[in-house]
Image: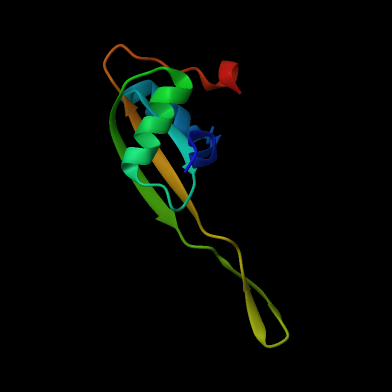
Length: 96
């Protein structure tokens, strides 16, 4: 899997900015099939920082309206919390 396909987008939310200020973490929306090792390598190569740890969360798609007999479902997705090494910093607004 290519590194620019692994990381889909940075998640800039209230919780994401709080975590980045307090714990030195960055939050990304990533490909559902990507492993922690793939995410680590992609962040290190794309942004030129060293990564200390990666934690991931899988979100199931929400159930939406019925369409006749079938029930609709929004797509599921995966979120990654990337902890940067001490002294490393990543400003996503400049890179995007």
